Image (cartoon, rainbow, N blue to C red):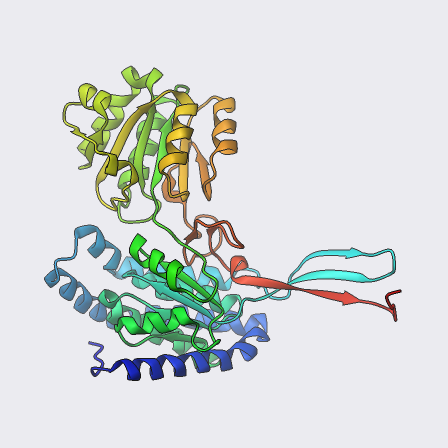
Amino acid sequence: MLTMPEKSRDDTIALMAGIGRKARAAARPLAIAAPQVKRDALLAMADAVVGNEQAILAANEIDMKNGGEAGLGSSFLDRLKLDSKRIHAIAEGIRAIADLDDPVGQVTAAWDRPNGLHIERVRTPLGVIGVIYESRPNVTADAGALCLKAGNPVILRGGSDSLNSSAAIHACLVEGLVAAGLPRDSIQLVPTADRAAVGEMLKGLSGNLDVIIPRGGRSLVERVQTEARVPVFAHLEGICHVYIDRSARLDMAVEVTLNAKMRRTGICGAAETLLVDRAVAPTHLVPVLEALAKAGCEIRGDAEVVKAFPAARLATDADWITEYLDAVIAVRLVDGVGGAIEHIETHSSHHTEAIIAEEAQAVERFFNEIDSAILLHNASTQFADGGEFGMGAEIGIATGKMHARGPVGVEQLTSFKYRVRGAGQVRP
């Protein structure tokens, strides 16, 4: 079990200042590291995760025991839990990142000016990244691996509930760094649950932190957005919608909605609200709700839904803006795609929305008029994931509009610079 002596606020400030300095020192050697060296480090990390499976499981058992005693909810414990399958999935995720093209140095645009200057826009690392996340131990590996691939040192501050699990995974990441000859401080884990550590990160660690990425619930993200003195890639809650259009096939509506809600209820891509076109309520509503209820989902509906499906509870205004992260879904009848768009634009967190429809015009209107990071047609919202997008993994789903939006993968963890080549030109 990971234990830390009690620290005063001054101790935590000193600890975080040291972490910031070490991260900055690692920035240049990591930024210029050869792609093969980074790939070797990542593959060694994946091997270390598999090789240390029992140690990781033992650490996770401690966290699970502590979480149970603390009264954590079932969905929270599901996000915290590791087993052999999930550990091997973590390793495979790291290997997938290793196999991605290295983004650093990629020329994203090039053009020539009439005066003979040749201009290129080239990807560069962002710098030192701070990731603040709640109790998902896999984020330790995903964030560490993605930042390394993009040439960025990273400071990881995981939730206190997963401190032991994260520490065991982090040890594997450091093992990979050392094996490849990269600075061991390229990936650091904050070794304390003291909330003052987060405060120091939000201040920027004396200029040593370039970007912060929060991944967690509304309270965490809002604190980061309010207090951070460095740029933030916001990962807000996932109030995700599924809309069943009048042109939807019933079998597809049942299957996709069931998967979107119940595959894993505790992830940010899980559907939280179901909207059904009033025109197909007589044929589509009850079969979809019966499938959800049979799978153990609680239905909270508007008055029309409750009338058609008496097992549903009457929804309140709060249900339309709640991220349940549990087997609960809010259901409303709407007047066609226009009604769905109006509801989504009013209540969504702009994370992920799906339309189930066969009519192309309805799909195009849905895609064109809804301003969310991810929009899906005839597919489950649970595909809102960097791994499913072919990015290897993700640090989170950015719901803001600046720089990165949607899954934050290796390309989103880079900035760019311009290279201008001349032959003695001077400006008149």
